[in-house]
Structure formats: C-alpha cells, structure tokens
Length: 446
Image 1 (cartoon, one colour):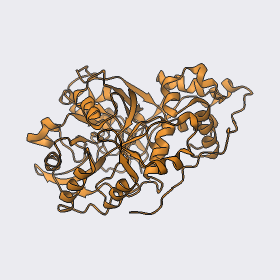
Image 2 (cartoon, one colour):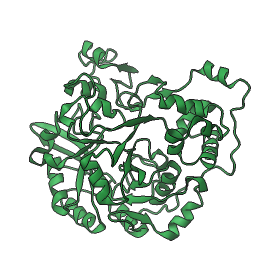
Image 3 (cartoon, one colour):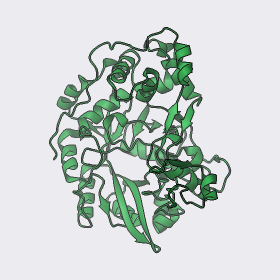
Image 4 (cartoon, one colour):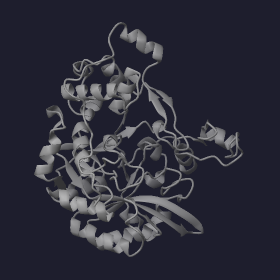
C-alpha cells in the first residue's frame, strides 16, 4: 500500500516545542495531513516513554496505535473526509556533543527501535552515560560512532539515520562542527549507515552533488516541534505496514518501495544561505567567498549555510543519478498558501477556518497539495487555491531565502497580480462548521 511517513518529530518534553505536542494531537494532525506513519519522537525521555507505554498498543509488527478509547475521542476533532489509519514508530533524536580528531563535534542522530523492551534497555544504557531526563532530545557527550554501537548491541533491528545532515551547528556534515564525510564520523561502523536526512535547508538534488552520499537513501522528515508542522517534509512509501518493511524500503532504496520524498523548498529553510540575522546580511556562497567569510556589517565570521557547505564538499556540478536517486516533490504547507491568498498570518482565524473548509470538502492536506486536479481543488470554493497549488507543483514561485536561523519565504503571487486575478471575488469563505481546535488533551507530564 502507498502511504506517507514522517519519521522525525518531538514531544512537549523537548525544548522549544508546543505544549500540545502529545500523542493525541500528533494522531489528529497526522489524519489532517494524510500521514499514516508518525515517529513517536523522544522515547529516551522517561516521562514521554511512560506516555508511550500508557497510550499506545501494538499494531502491525513493530508499529503501534493509539488505544481505541483515546482514538475515539480524538476522531471527533477530525473531519470524516480525513479520517484514516495512523501508526506510530519508535524513533528518537539524540544530540551528540564530543571531541574527535582535535575538534568539538555536534551532531544529531535519529535512532529507530522495533519494540518497547529494546527501548527500555537502550534507555538504561544511555542513562548510565548522561542525563536523559532534562530534555526530550538528550545531549550526550558520546561519540556518534559509539551511539551506533550501543544501538546495534541493543537490537539487531535497530538503525541510525544522521539527522538534517547539513545544518551548520548540529549535523554530521555541518560547517560549524561536522565532518567532511559519513565515514569520518562513524569509522568502522559506517557500513551500518544506509540513509541520511536531508533537512529543511537542502533537497535531494543538492545532496546528489556529493558522491560520498551515493550509497545512502535520502529521507525527509518534518522535525516537527508542534503537531501542525507534521508533514512539512515526509517520505512516500509503497510497502506493507510494518517496522521491517519500512526499514527494508529505506535500506534498499528500492524505487518500487521507496517512492520519494516531499520537500520544503530548501530556500525556505532557515540555514540555506550564509549571513548574519542581526545585521540583516544574507549572502550567496560566491559573495561569502568575496568577503572571506566575514560579515561586511560587523566584521565577525558569517554563519555559513547549507548551500555553502554543499558547494564545499560537492564533486559534481549537478545532482547525479544513482541507484538510490528518487523523485521528490517541493511543497508549501497549505496554511502558508492560504495565508498568502488571504493576506493574513498563517495562524490567524481566517486561515484556520479556510483550512478546515478545504479539508472538509476535499480531504487531507497532502491529497490537496499533491494529488487532486485543479478542477477538484476548485470545489473547495476558495479563490486562487487551485492556481496557487498548480504553481507550487510547477515550481513557479518567488523565493526569499532563509539564513542564520531565519526562515525564508516562498511566495506564489505578486500582490498586484492577486488583485487582478481575483477581481470582485471574495477572499472570505465561511467554514462548514466550527474551526478546528488543536487543544492539549492531556497536560500532565509523565
């Protein structure tokens, strides 16, 4: 079966996350988005692991589902047009900060395990090494290679995927504290690394310029810190629903099983270009080289972005095709599209109401963004929505790139163009029923 999987999310136990980032709201958001498999995130945190054990029950091999009595309450917040199966997979992100080859290294890694007993044993081992209680994404003074060894010793079915591999501060290839290759990081265990996460600020084509990544399947995930950020990046699979099938699809890169990824426009990522946010300086790699990596405003070193780092390690001019090259689809979240059309903020009541109307009339978000024809999208009755989605699919967009922690902006229309296209049509659509509520169902920690 074809389905969408988002394999990197966080709970409310992680820093800088929404208070409603619990299993119930992840379940609700997954249905609204059209996502079938969602990572639990943060399973190393004792409080979150307790919630996982309390609220989830085994489903297909290595996957879990929300208990029926909890799911029935949550389903009341999901339009019937969006209701579908949701499964959870045990995944957690670890922050590794350590010294290697004379340099401080800071990289994030996703660890996958197939069952609760393995998670329990893995957590015991990490608890003996560092503090796993202070944050949902624990910071450990542990070599990433050694983390992988612990994982493999815990379960033959465990696997590790380096997270957002290009971001400057916390990634395996990052400009600030990374390595120049996967092999340099994981050493004698590098052959156990069969995939890498591209991150929001890069897309597969950029990654394929580096031949050292040829053997890896490139996965994409949301790294969501709030439920409604689910699916801003995701993976499209065609397998049975199970942990082994998902692992096999990613490991093999079989194009009949791993069908590709949904991607942020990489320019929208907050570390795509070089620059200084405080100085309002955003530079291309060529300009950064001209300035010798120094900010022209304050004279301090620039934050070198993902594009610069890719250029530094690339040994191809354009993205090459390998056995593990897959299609990818650049998307703009539906709330951002509606925000531009309605000329209000993406979290405004007008956007929420129109978002709900679109989902009730058309189905889940990914169906709207990726599958439905423009004529079908017009049935939502939201002016310019079908035109905006069509332009997004064709990559006919205007880009204002992100840099130094500042998200970029992707625009579909020129302001005066919107007025011309709309004519006298109203921008305001009344929702078919009350606005969606993304409330916290269980506020208790632990």
